[in-house]
Image (cartoon, rainbow, N blue to C red):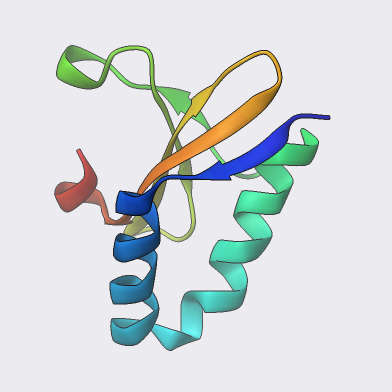
Length: 87
């Protein structure tokens, strides 16, 4: 299992996201934990293209995403928010 690493930018984005959307706080944590443990079913994880090539995104809801990088020993969480804001 990989370790979870939260960047300072992700922590700021997460605080802002939870302030604006407290109803998704638990769901966001669940999605992050599932990414780390490899339980990807239903998360619609996909590789990103263009300037974000090499990164991945997972679905929190229809409108919200978590952006992250995968390394051999850890998952690095980079951004969270609305679809158009994180891409």
